[in-house]
Length: 410
Image (cartoon, rainbow, N blue to C red; front, side, top):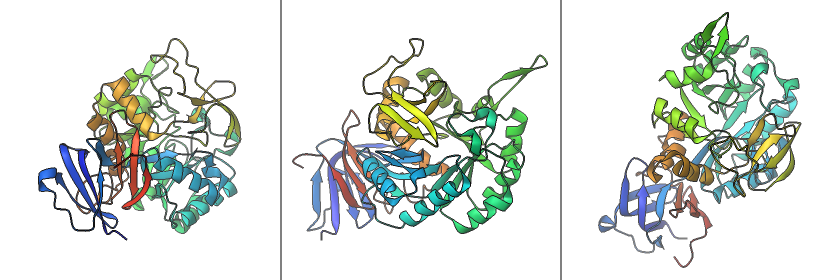
C-alpha cells in the first residue's frame, strides 16, 4: 500500500490564497506539505497524480441537508446514509451534517440513533461529522415545508435526555421566541452545540435576546423567517434585518438558483462580509435524481424546473427545485454543492477562490471545525477535491483515501 499521495501541477486554493502551479503531499489521512512545484520533494514510492493545471481545494462541507441521491435522513437506515455519502463525494462534498425534520418524536429519535451509529463506519464516501436537528422547536408562523402536526416549543424533559445520549448532535435550529427557546439556547451554548435561529418569527428585540442566550447562526437566510412588518403604524425589524445587521450572527445561503435571486445573495454578502456566510444545499432525497413526485417529512412535493418570469434567473433545463404540490412554498432544494459554487460564480460575480471559501473554511469555522478541515494546510485532514474551471469534480479524497476519480490518464 502506497503511504504517500502527491497531487502535482495544480492551481491550489487554500482558500485564503492561490498557488498557481503547486503540489499537495498527503500521508495517511493528513496533508503533509503544500507549496509551489519548485519546492516539491516527493518521497520514493509516492502515488503521483498530475492534475495538469486543474484546481485543487479543500473538500466541500454541507452543514444542512435532509437527503440526496435517493437517500433520506428520516428513513433512518444505514443504506440511505450510504447512498447520500457516496453520491455527495462525486459532487465534491467530503463532510456533511445529516439534518432531521419536524416529525413524530420517535421518528426523530430513530434517525438520530441511526446517524450516530452509521457515522462510526467507513461509508466510502463523504464523512458524517455530526447531526443537525431542524425542528420541532420552531414557529408555526414560519413553518415552510415542515409538517405543522409535529411543531411545538422546546421542553427540557425531551431535549436534555436526547443531548445526553447523543453527543453527535452538534447543531440545532430553533425559533428563540417560542416559549423555552432562550433556555434551549443557553443549554446548547453550554454544550458547545451551534444554536441556529430558523423558521422563526422573531422581532429585532427577540433576536438580540437570542444572541445573548447562545444563538450564533441563522438557518437558510430569507427562508422561513420574519421580515419587516408594521404594528400600529410602526415598522418592526424581523430576523432578516437583524441577521444583516448583527455581526454576532453568521448565516447560510441556498444558492440553487431558485430559493434566492442574485440580488438578495449579493445583499447578504455585502452586509455580512465574506467570512460570515456559507452555502448549504438543504437538499432532499431527490437531489441528483431528476424531476417527479417525492415525499418530504410526510408532505407530498413535486420536483420541477419552472421559474416565474419575474424571477431574476430564467428557467434552465436540469436546474430543478422541490416545491409543495400547491406550489405555495419550496420544499428543500435538489441541488449539490458543486452547482452552488458554480451559481455563485455565474450569478454573484465571485471568483473561484471566493466561492470556494463559502463552502470550505467558512462552513468549518461556523461549526468550529477549522482546526481539522476546510483548509489546505499542513496537518489538516486530507479532504481534498480536484475540479476544472467549470467546477466539474474530477477527484475526491476523504481522509487521504481516493474515493472518486474521473481524471483520465493522470
